[in-house]
Amino acid sequence: MPTDPETKYRAPALEKGLDIIELLSDSHDEMSQSEIARALDRSQSEIYRMLSTLVRRGYVSRTSGDRYSLSLKLFSTAQRYSPINRLLEVATPKMRRASRKVWQSCHLGMEAGGSIVIVSSVESPGNWGLAIRTGSVIGLCNTGTGRVLAAFRSEEELQQLITTHTPAVGEPEFDEPVFRAELQKIRELGYYKAKSETTLGVTNLSFPIFHPSGEIVAVLSCPFLERVDAMRTANLEETEQAYRQLADDLTAYFRGGSLDDEDIAHDRR
Image (cartoon, rainbow, N blue to C red; front, side, top):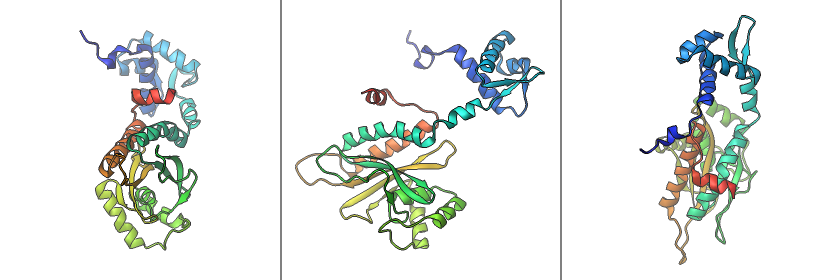
């Protein structure tokens, strides 16, 4: 009989510990051992062993009245690994893989203090291509990355971005009605696709990456260049599909997904 991959590699003890952590995270009050056991439909002896370990490791606190609550250790542990570092560690090998597939460069952009900053850039594998250097500050109103970062924000966040933004080198004068009309088109389409407003012969493709809270965290962009020689590479539609899928994969990862086996193999090379 075939084994379900979801159940083949289960770790029951770990699952019990995670069940306790998740239960306590949803509880506004401290809970007794018996209350925890009852809520999880477990025996008190099972819960006692798990609680003892979690208390010893500092993830759960116990009061003098033998009631339990989450400590701040889980929170402090998560803070050591910033969202930017986590995004770059997961995204960069995937970006390299996608670039090799379509022979087009790509980059990740994020907003920092009103500026649109390129935090990761991958060049195309061919002899030529268009790549934006990591650390570059680019425009808000005249780039796909800037527009997508603005499009998927609340009105309050959008207004703050507009107010705090300092124009990048070469960025044209800000026209808010035109800018807002562009943002509405992006919301309707779900991403940005248009001729570049900074370089001739380039079609910009920009796709949002979302945090589990629903907030936009970064934008994956590709400055598409069409080849006209004898070499066959991915066309615009194929490139669009590849990078849209990558952005969706990164959003799914932040919502509790994982790297696929091929990505893990690439990371280990």
